[in-house]
Length: 286
Image (cartoon, rainbow, N blue to C red; front, side, top):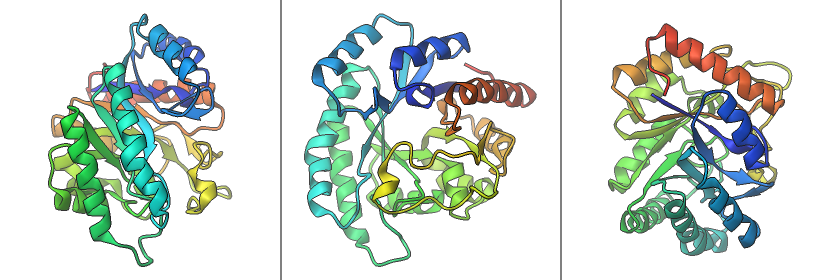
């Protein structure tokens, strides 16, 4: 199994992040934000400089996470802009970074309140067609602030869209925040569609509460708190997640999206925890 780390989980300066990630023996990254901006946002010259310098490294990009469709489902203008502007820019950036996986979301909102499922299906179908034309795959993440917040809800809408270019980024910790157990329920629901996996773990406590669904939830840093711990030390059931992935023959990326407040310590501890769990389960760490 290939292991990657989102650079902004380590440092907002991507090259400082790469230095630490390399020291941990990891050679794959996920790209989400650099210098405090979520890609493809930011100064074009700065992004260009990053791409050019990144190409001189030995790293590869497992996935790009540009926050496509992480906007309120009630904001039609923003949704349209994401489809017609942000997604195409993200597809272009993915090609420049030599990656074909782009993580997307299922619109911010509470699925317990009224929402237009057909509209979301049509949106994802249109986005998937654009991705298909670009040779990319969209990996729909189950996200607790979004309409698609569990593995089961992701599997259901991916099946309804019914396009090979729409698959899943499974985040069992996100689903746990919405009451879904990773194994067996989440895994069995999403198994046919998994192309990328986010791993993080948490413990319930005074600072543990479901993440907000409002505008404040749209920040990359919004859900970072002391509740997160190295994988395997919390209540998500990461050992069983890894075991199930291994038994199904999963060979793609697992991304250590630590969310731990102390970023550098979180990266070190999470890589060490992943190595330990994978060694115990006889899973290659690549």
